[in-house]
Image 1: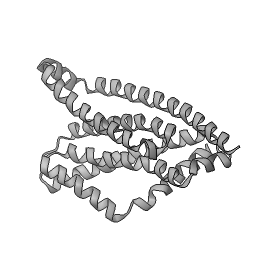
Image 2: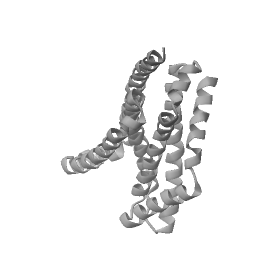
Image 3: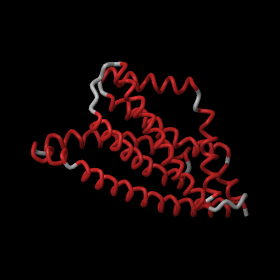
Image 4: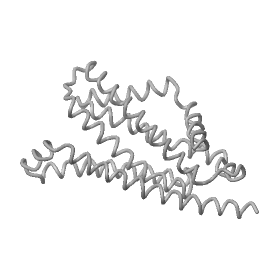
Length: 227
């Protein structure tokens, strides 16, 4: 557990140079623009979570540029600890980012006089958290398999595709579902949360085992090349 804890601390230190006041102000400015132009706090929350998704990839980028994966092998760090640490760090980043996006949403609601329904806002908060965790869960196995440099184009395309599918499916469902069905779902939010939670856990489980398998093979290849 200590090894995993240290690995998570290392990932936080990796992104620390990028968490400058300038970058934070730029992110808030973009999120504020989307909130104001769309008169919707959900747009700003989605943008904030998108920034978290970008930050999740930074340790992979830094690792590729500095050969940190090879260093893990030389130092005898268990590959399972590397994968577990990276997934726990990803989850921590998402929870921190989601809470920050919720706080920013309330500020933008007050600043731009955007009406806000608390129940709806919490539902959006939970939904976005689940969606972006699944989105990142699809990216991590690719990063572990081939590294950030080779995978970044494919993962960004995947991210854009998933966002388009989410928006498209939301519109399609609103057109296809009857008023009665929508009313039933609205009155049974717990059912949506349970089903969504199960899907997120399933996606995380599959993602983790794929990442572990891919990273094991990748480490073996590196070790052979050094011998």
